Image: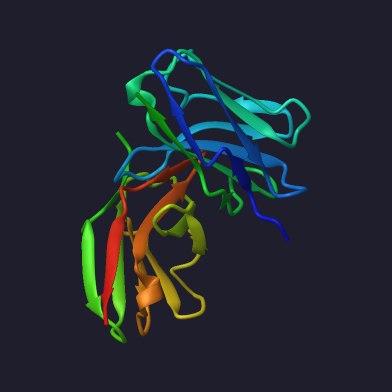
Length: 114
Length: 109
């Protein structure tokens, strides 16, 4: 079956632009996670949804970062007024139910802010 | 604070040898651990997991060992192949998942 998909795969933005990154989780997966991965580092947790409810957003680095999952399936991570330090790979993962289940990752969106 | 980390950033092995990748964790409340493999340009791929009520779990060519006494996790890959070359992350899962920085495994032909 289809895995987690993300789009776009690559995004170049000028500093100050807004960007929106999309995640399509595995069908039927209740939980969805966003991570930020800097070059040469492990993924860092950003936020977590269970269905449409955002249960944990403690990892979002600033109020410029916003995530939503309005219908409990597709999710969008929005970054407003992008800064150079936002350059990273943004990974989405989904799990069948909850944080204690295996998370399956998408290929990521590589964001470069110039 | 609590953290997940790896002992070695790089590991180079000969094709056919066994590989051992180590990981230390410090959150004694962690009860679920996962190993992921990440190839260049791809997202992390699940390899194997283990819960804290076990000390060993085997998969196909991979074994994960958990030593709760010293808070240590290891991934053993048998008969390492060139396709195993990647960055390997351990992750601990409590309220959220925390990854270590990763170990880059290089397999020499």
